[in-house]
Each structure stands twice: as structure tokens, then as C-alpha cells.
Length: 611
Image (cartoon, rainbow, N blue to C red):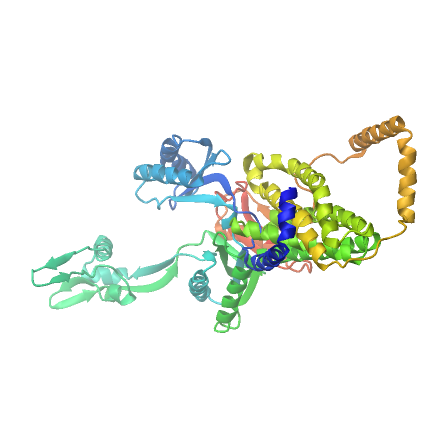
């Protein structure tokens, strides 16, 4: 360690240039590092979702769940498998051990699903394999509501979806509250009877004329011609002009015996925001993207498109994760500034303004160095990293204070500043290093914290270890070299006097040292009394502290064979009682036929989300 310090002082300009580089590069990393709410961890859960319109829960279990379970149960590393069957839907949830290889597990699940889907009914939709990832949760929900036709609202939402998904930081924008568009054919039975057309003929006519035919290409030796057979219905006119029957010399078209109109599938859910029918877009960011910049870009796109929409459309932004990140960043900056100011006040009172400046520089220096390293490792600035940085604020200046104080004493004895700081750094190198290592030893076991919580919280020991290591280099290399460079030589103090606080402390310490046995017993008694007081008066143990929530959810329960319209009417009654509360920023209501796949009780017919 002494050799490193000697090299640092012999090349002081290089060390100071390195300090400037760390501060500058750390500041740039702080600006550019991706910022997100939760760390990007792989939750060991993958679920397979299967949809079959109109199927009963019993048939869904027999025809969907069991064939899928039979294939999935042989996956290596599978810890638990849970299945759910409901009306028109079934799902299989797979739980793996924490720390699993998410990519390999996802590949294995997809292979088994491909083997199982050939055993499913033909009318079953393509099974969907979904990996649960905290980083892929929605970071912003954009709501479009208002008293305008549903078709217009859905059309606007789909156009907005394309523009939002074109942003580089957006993974996808999922539309909620829309319905699948259909082309309804209304047939006149009297006209059909006149022309002698049967319903089965119409069904086969539409089916046979809406097929993709791969015609290939024709190679004549003198050229190659790609052939295309127009067999897919694309426009409304394609159906209306379709020939149905030849009556003598007259061709009867589809438009003569039927009328067509655009419509939607029958609703199985309803969504409203503030009491108005709504369509929502749940925006998910890409892994590693800056959440603040991404949400800002989404808002800019929405506000730009809003200028071209009808006046009755209301736009609401819900569950905005960037606000949390901004608050945490603001808290971090406030804590850093407060810590620097308080430390400088204390050190000015004890050591003087010069030492206060040097010690105060150790905090942002260690912080920016830590962020530079975290950014180079590919980590993001998330809630755990921010909490860890705030946690170590008070630990970053310990070594710098000790070295600066000893250097100040050496200069008071007449040594040159460079010699004084070099001597202080060498003298305190091992004590400061031992103190730092002791603190690191407390956080080191947290690196091996098992389970999902361990994967989530591992960023805390990593951040603390990097920050404290940076503070060690600040205390033993950068601050002493800087102090020796900027400090002027001053005359020797003829008398060394101690202040009132120091004198009082010295008298108390001398008295305690005269009675070491009693002092030790008093310390042990204080420890035992503290534990006893906590056991008697403590509030117990809980995983998360009880904090005031910013979100709430009202679940509406009802039993009976209710239609989706009756369920929605009940949810509306609950919603109307809540809408006028001034404390609420947003009220998002949903009613649905089935709560399958939503981790809700079977008799839940709707939820009202409050922000």
C-alpha cells in the first residue's frame, strides 16, 4: 500500500488528471445510464395461455390442460406446475428454481408446447408462451376515452400504437378494451328462395374464395415469372361482387342477396376511465432503455397526435413509472448535497475549511466513480441501486476525515503539505483499509442471497462494495494528492491546545479507563437491555414496511349466471360511488366475463383501480 501511495505522489499530475476524468466521466454516466424502477431480473415463472372461444371449463380442462400438462411435466428444472381452466380459456403456470437459465427454460417450454398443440382441438388459438419479467411490465398506461363511437376510438388507438412502437425505447404497446373487427353478412331469406340458393352454398362460397393459394413461379428458360392467385378477401367489394349463381344469362352476385356491414365480436369485457368508455395502451419499454426518456418520448408522440383527434377525446396517463424514478433521483441528489453540506459544517468546526473541502469532495467523487463502474457493467439505475447509494453516503467520508485530520496535525508540527499528506496516507492506510473491509464483510454474504428476493436485492451489496472501494481510493490516493497540491505550507504551532469538547471527551475517557471492568459490564448491560426492550416493546417482524399506498383496487364480487352486461351494470354502480372523490387522480374500471388468468377469485366480475 505504501508503494502505491509513493507512486501516486510522485506522479501527482497524472493522479489529478485521473480524478478530473473520473468526475467528468461519472457525470456523463449519471446522465446517460438507463434509469428504471425495478431491476431487470428473471422471475422463475413461465406460463402457457390457451384460448378456445365458447369452450366450457370442464372441456377446457380435458381438451386443453391435460394434453399440455403431459408434455410440460418432463421439462428439466421444473419446480411446480399449476393449471387453471375457465370458460373459453386455460393456462398452465410453470415455476422453476431461482437462478435458472431463463433462455434455456423458455426454449424447452416452447418445444414442448409445439409437441402438445397438435393434440389440441382445431379451433383452439395458437398457444401463447409468456415469460414473467419485471423489466417487461408496463411503465405507462395511456387511456383514450370520451363520448365518441367505439370504431373511431379503436382506430385512433391502433394508429397511435404503431407510432408509439416505432420509438427506439419501446418494446410494445398493448391495446386493451378493443374488440376484434368482424364483417357481418345479413342474408334476405326471400331473395335466397327466389334464386334457389342454400345457406351451405354461401358458406362454402365465402370459405373457398378466402384461401391463400401459393402458386409458385414458372421458369421458361427465357425468364422466370412469379405467379399469384388472388384468393384472399381484402376489401368489402371483394365480397359484394362475388358471383353466387348463374340464372340464365344473368349472374347473381353476393350483393344482390345479402347486405354487409362492419361490426365487432360480442363483448366479453368493458373498460372505462373516469366513467367514460376507454381504450388503453400499456406501454412496455425495452430492457436497458432509459425509462424517463422513453416515457417522455411517448408523451410527446401522444400530444402531437392529439392535435388531429376529435375534441371529445380525453387522454389520461396512468401508472407513470418515470415519476417514481424522478422522485428517487431527486431524493438522491438532495441527500448527497445535504451530506456534503453537513460534513463540511462538521469538518469546518473541527479541522477548518481546507479539510472540509477535501473531505466534501470525497462524496461526489466516490458516487460518480461508482456510477461509472455500474454503467460499464451494464447495470441500470434502479430503486435498489439508488437506495444503496443513499445508504453509503455517511460511510464514504470516514477514511478521508481520518487522513485529512492526521495530515493537518502533521502540518501543525511543521511538515510540508506534500510530506504531511503522504505520511498521513501511509500511516492510516491499513487502519482505513481494515475499516472498509470490515464494512464490506457485512454486505458480502448478501451476494449469495437465494431466491427471487436475492436476485432482486443483489444490486445492493454490489453497489455498496463498488462505492466503498471507490471511497477507499479517494481517501488514500486522490484526496491526499489533491491536499498536498493545493495546501500551502504554514508555520509551526508553538502550542497545541485542545477545544472544550475534546477536553471533555478526554476527561470522560480517562475516567472510564480507570474502571475497565465496570465499563465493560455497563456496555454488556446496555446491550442486553436493548434486546430485552425490543423483545418486549417491539412491533415484530414484517417483510415490507407499512407505507401509504398510491394505488388501490376495489374488487366487485357477484354470483349467478349473469351476462357481461349485467356484470358491467353492477360495476358501474360501484364506480359511480367513487367517481366524485376529490382525492382520486384516476379511476380505471374493468368488468369481464371470467377472471381466469388474472389471479382473482372466481366470483370477481370486475375491478376498479384507483390512483
